[in-house]
Structures are given as structure tokens and as C-alpha cells.
Image (tube, rainbow, N blue to C red; front, side, top):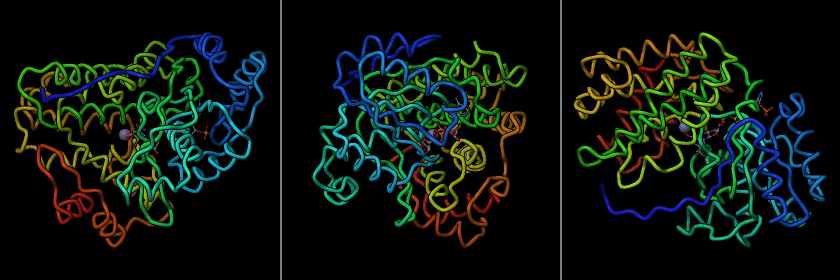
Length: 381
Ligand code: NZQ
Ligand code: ZN
């Protein structure tokens, strides 16, 4: 293990009825004006909005609605939220949704407390926010694990860029599997695939031998696959949904990442693909992973072999990769870029732009060149 410091700021309330318990305990600690932030309306249809609104009013809070946060939240939406938070003198933000709503709110929180533009501050000056409006997260669709970290992924449309912005982490997170009951099958599975991807991307980075993070990552991967298979049998298996909800948090709350360099190149490629296409994050990853892994199989053969044995009960690295490819098909997730919902036609020219603007990161097992990223993307067509 490399040297690290670790602490955990997010209190988790897990299980049926967790929102009522959490809000009863947490709301007395925060100011009067609460921004209730959500997406395109699913929470209004399934009753979660009304339930939370009632709890907020019972606690004597004044509510400022911030609605319409889209999947792959944009920088413009962040600025809209930050302006509203400042104007309404919001004391606390309650983000209700999935990765998109939670990420947008993390940056709204930080931007509202800043005198300067957060993107310029982070990307041009290399400075990161140290303050923000306190926030909590109520998860209604799981997969990203966004509720337990302070990093957000934002699309800056004018710059044709999708990437990380550091914001404010939630002080508490509500994880009630019942709140995910109305999520459509494809989103449930693509979200869970995102979880699997986070654990794989962390595991394939470098660490010393026999460390607990590798073993824990393999356990999260195996458990995610087992529970995704349970959902393929019965989408309403709430125990499996609950297991996946915690797998999701475990994969991206930072615990697996301590003391190591990670990979996360499939994510970098997918994010920039998202900047051009606005595709679904988990679905984009499902297309990219097998192709990318064929490129790096020999660079991490021992790790791929252990992955094959532990996650899919196979003997060799190649068989493990084959099993992953088959599993993606079994889940009905896309295997080609052409199957993704995209705002533009995905052509070699578009993919060239994705490859040329993709974030190149320090990672292991092997850093890709832009040329190889382009090759991978072409192979995904
Ligand atoms: O907008 P509404 O109407 O609420 O519909 C949403 C949305 O269409 C729907 N939904 C949410 N809860 C529901 C529901 N539908 C029915 N019943 C419910 N209870 O689900 C759809 C997808 O929601 P979204 O939040 O976009 O999905 P997800 O959680 O997968 O988040 C994706 C975003 O997170 C980023 C991705 O890049 C993407 O922008 N990520 C964030 C990470 C992080 N902060 O740690 C890590 C990830 O790698 C990822 O990059
Ligand atoms: Zn992800």
C-alpha cells in the first residue's frame, strides 16, 4: 500500500424508511432555507418528492425548488443552480436523484460560495473549493456511488468536454432500495454495470501484492454480478437492489482506492464520448470495457486471471474477458456504439475528436496513446 490519509465525512442511512429517520436527525442541524433539487420529474411521479417535501415542512423548513437537472448535468445547469442558491439565500441543499442530480448539486454548492468561476479556478489556477453550502443526498437510482464522494462529473457543452469538477461532498446520504423501485430495467442494469466498472478500474491499477483493497474490489465485483443476475430473474427483487445499492457506494466511496494508483481509462474515454453524444454513462462503459480490456490483457495478465477466477469462475485471463463480454450481452446492455442513444451520429470523425480531446491520466496497467484510444473507439463501432 502507498502512503495515505483517510477519513469519512458522509453519514449513511441505509434501508427502508431511511429518509424519514435521516431527515428527522439531520434537518435540525441545518438552516431554514432548503434547496430541494431533483431531475426531470421521476420523483414527482413516484411520490418521493411529496414524501420529502412533507418531511421538510414538518421540520419547519422553507423550500426552494431546483428542478430539471438532466442526465449528464451541464455546466450551465450548475450556474443556474448556483445563482438560485445565492438569490434565495439557501442554507442547505437536498439532492434527490442519481449521479446526475447529486453531482450537479455538489458543484452548485461550491460555486454558490465562490466569487469566481469554479471551472476556471480548478482548471486554470489548479485551486479547489474549501467551502460550500452544506448538502445531503437522497439516492433514487444507484450505480455511480456519487453520494459518498465530493467529485462531480460535469458536461461543459460550449467546450465539448465532460470531466471532473471537485465540489462539496454530502454530509449524509439516504440509501433506501425502495426508492429505486420505479427505475426502468435498462437504467438499473446500466447503473449496476457502472458499479462493476468502478471496481474493475480501481482493481486494475497498481498495488502491492496481497493487499486488502484488491480483495475487497474483487468481492464487490463478484457481488455486483451475482445481484445483477438476480435482477435478470426478477427485476423487483428488493434484496438484490439493496445489495447493489451498497455495492455502488462501496465501489466509489474511496475505500477501494486508498494506497494505490487506479486505472479509470475506460471512464476517461466514456466521459469524452459523453461530451459528444450525451450517451448513458453505464451503457457507454458496457461498449468500451471489453474492447479496451482486449488491448491491455497482456499488461495485467495475472490480475485478469484472478478476476476471471473470482468473479466468473473461469481459469484464464482470456476466458474471464470472454465471460465479461457474454455477461454484458446477458444483461441486454449495448455492445456497439451504434446501439447507444446519441444526439449525433457516431462516425469515425466524431470518434477522432473524442480521442483527441480525451483526458489522458496517470494510471496503470498502461497509459494509452491517443492513437490507441482512437483504435479502441473504432473497434467499438
Ligand atoms: O431525471 P429523472 O426524471 O429523475 O429520471 C432519472 C434519469 O432519467 C431516472 N431516475 C432516477 N431515479 C428514478 C428514476 N426513474 C424512475 N424512478 C426513480 N426512482 O434515472 C435516469 C438516470 O439518472 P442519472 O442520475 O442520470 O443516472 P446515474 O445515477 O447513472 O448518473 C449518471 C451521471 O453520474 C456521473 C456520470 O458521468 C453521469 O453524468 N458519474 C458520477 C460519478 C461520481 N460522482 O462519483 C462516478 C461515475 O463514474 C459517473 O461518471
Ligand atoms: Zn462510472
